[in-house]
Length: 177
Image 1: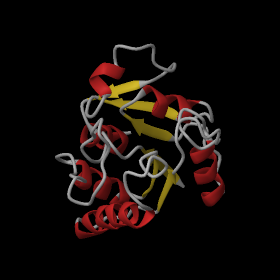
Image 2: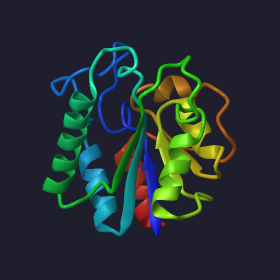
Image 3: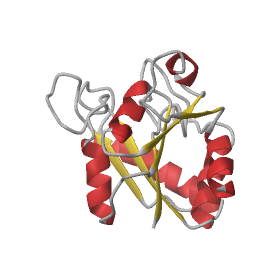
């Protein structure tokens, strides 16, 4: 199985420091939906791992989050692709869970779901915590310059991190190798 794990906000859709709180605020980044579809069509299994502390903070509810994820699935399906799995952390920063990135709980859950080791699995994020969570379980970190990526690029990145302008560029790289 060729698995790729994507962050959501800042990688697939626009990010906001005020949180993405509604379906109307969930706006795909240019080329991201097509990139996911191309990966899926080429035999990649696409999973999403996303922190959604807006749930714990009361900014939106599970039904709203599911509407955003359903819209994501529909848009990818319209392009002939598929997202196999979306896992989210609903907790706030002080809740003491093991699934809030930079902790690797979401990644472990994805690995267990597919019953595959995560060593070398590409993971795409725009923040240091995305990359750290994946690297903690052996994933290969890919940083995109969308979302918070430009600021993140100035930080000390996990060893072996590859940097690309956006998800479409990552998809191009993965499809060429």
